[in-house]
Length: 130
Image (tube, rainbow, N blue to C red):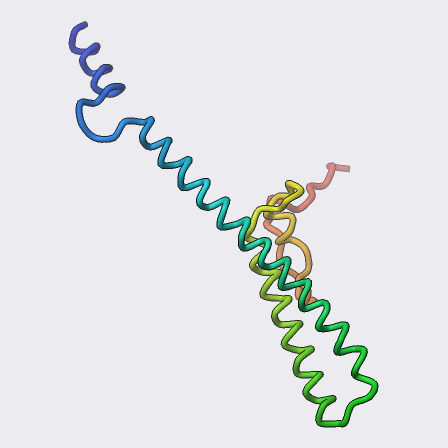
């Protein structure tokens, strides 16, 4: 009986090393750091997406009165904007959603480039057997 008490006590109250409470405190600290980093990235992406949208609208407005060389430059810029939007889409797929959507829901949708992202097999609907 004394042996199992000693074993139990040594597992729950170790004489040296970290105790579970220390690990939990470290976990909470790292989780807070991760959340803060994710929030910063999300707000940065939102800000940059807004700026890209404004730039895109400005390019559309001035597109009517440009030379052929400027037209080519505008098209290159629009292409770069689309590439950047695709990068943001991919980054956002790995960030938590504000409205509580699950990661797989956002990854199962089509990408802005038009290519279809594959849905995991468990996310596909199951037939009702009829």
